[in-house]
Length: 145
Ligand code: CA
Ligand code: CA
Image (cartoon, rainbow, N blue to C red):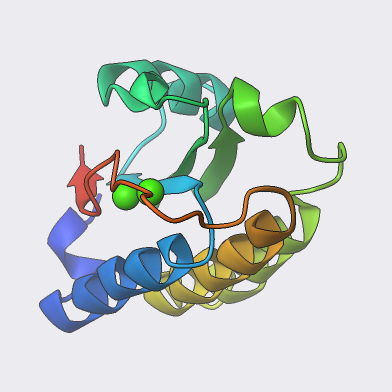
């Protein structure tokens, strides 16, 4: 098992956080990234658990979006809250997942996340545009473990 620090160096972490800031300039969606080594349950189940643990269900309109990655388990999930899932088409996350998949395959975790987050921002903008007075409801930091 490798160390989490090996997956993302500080520069890469910074690029991901920057991508979240940029994406959230376009949309009222609130994006977070959580990374761990091993997923001890199916990725989507774990993402649901973390969603609650990270208090991502505390947004006003249910617009939280979690990018969950279990690096050693080579699995990930993207989970949107009720406000988003109730409004977007069923295949909404497919193209974002493809971007992640394509990069993760080559071990390019940071690049995959950055590009996926930018794309998510653009896609979310259609349904959840940024509006004046928007608050940063969920902290734009990567959480781990
Ligand atoms: Ca916001
Ligand atoms: Ca945020």
